[in-house]
Length: 111
Image (cartoon, rainbow, N blue to C red; front, side, top):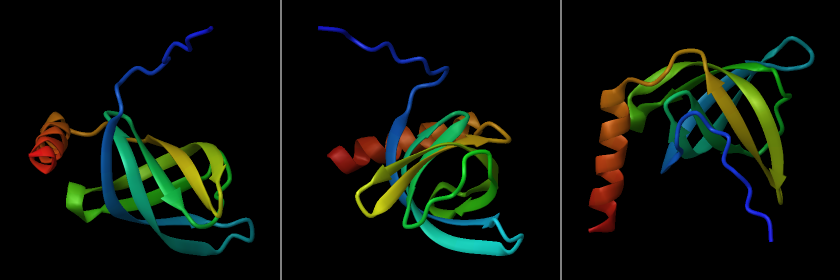
């Protein structure tokens, strides 16, 4: 039995919240979508969307519940049934106060 080692620099924190995204499609047009954040790390987000977005695409995002907006690069895309999971690398790391607030919010949801 093999155990896969997690090769992440920063741990993922499960966190569900809506995210608005935009990107330039293959035709050079700006596309928009509503996504769902699945988890967060200091330098990334994992989101779920209804349409695929190419790896290496640059996206803009806004997650009001996290009080975060910025840009990111799509690092991987995984199909999940009729949806897609995107791994995003943030262009700017999240502030530690945001990560602390996420952990506290998760803890209060468990109570």
